[in-house]
Amino acid sequence: MSTYAFVASHHTVDLTTVAALSAGASGVPDVLAADIARQLGVKGAVVLATCNRLEMYVQLHVSAHVHMVRELIADSIAQTSGLDKELVNTSFDVYADEEAARHLLTVASGLESAVVGEREITGQVRRALAAAQAKAQEDGVPLPGELVQLFEHAAHTARQVGQHTALGAQGRSIVSVALDLADEVAEKDWSTRRALIFGTGAYAGATIAALRERGCTDIWVNSRSGRAAEFAAKREVSAVPVDGMEQGMAEADVIIGCSGGSDPLLPEQIPAGHHTILDLALSRDFDPSVADLPNVELITLESVRLAAPEETEESVATATRIVESELAAFVSRQRSRTIDSAIVALRSHTLDVLDSELEKVRNQFGCGAATEQFELAMRRMVKSLLHTPTVRAKKLASEGRAEDYVQALETLYGIQVEES
Image (cartoon, rainbow, N blue to C red; front, side, top):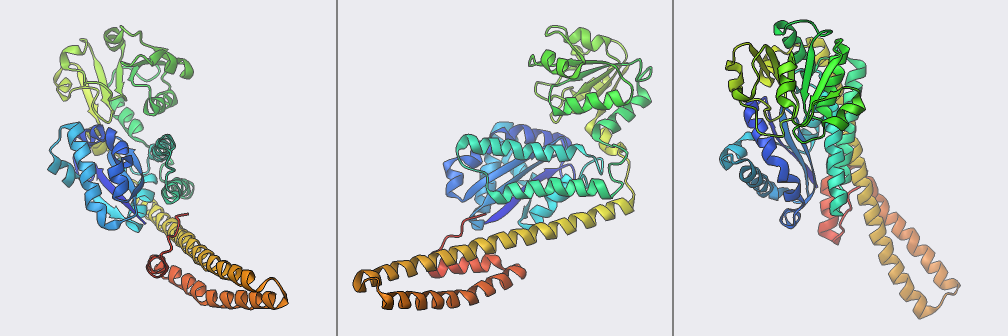
């Protein structure tokens, strides 16, 4: 069993492509849960989509099928997004097993983010796992334990980095850097500015919290899906009426896009006046040509990426060491789980054979003293025979060769080792 990570991020493709890929990935969980994927050996998947990346972690029973699984993913994204399939295919880097685990631990710790050390990504990793578990429960097929353990360990690693380094200590995030940029161009100050937020998701909630930290109290929420009133009430901010979007924008000093769920607003839809617009949505809330309007300053994710402060080399180096240490602990633990399952499988198989043969002896010779002595001797012999393969299993696991042992059991005895 192997874990593969298919990764498209701001490090390798532009953010517009990342957004298009993410928009096209809505059907990927269903594709990877379909019969054809199951036949290729797909046991489960977790999709992580943020404003800077689209990543899919896939547990695959037959490693030789990884290229066919990649084709399934590319076909689905290309058909949904309208992107050329070749562009989709070349947008993804692929990591396997330990490298996939290292990548996720690094991402969850904020080391791969546009704003290094940002803490938002940790919550996004947790939510990605929760969504995959809910999908698996709906389909009646549990998410593989190793995938769950990988994502849980990634969140644990992020906490260790947060506790033992200065990364994230200043609360830097995509939102905070964007608000810093807004400060440089917007009129008034935060205590007197009116902020309008597009969206009602977790990202919008984090933005409200960031605005309050800066002293902004006049906060409004707009939702083109009609969820603004309920969302605003829970957070004690104001909701724009369903038909009041234009007026809401006209009265706002700072407009923040956190939705990305509808077609981007065009220049002619933006009311006249001075506006600072922060487009932080995964897929744009505002058309880029809005930047050409007079008296409008448009701050995008690309602006944030370029303006993001660099963390100290010492903090990054310490965080990287923590990631490597936690990766080693995770890999060691997974090897132990695999080899323990293999040992149990061999023992169970051997004892089943023994019990079957002993039952034949009892049926033929009865249950007298001689039969009991024979049974005792046979059990001692089987215990002795199991000792060497058990010791050998532990040694192979310590060398990172647990899979060799598992494959040997399947080849010699037809034993299928269940994943823990």
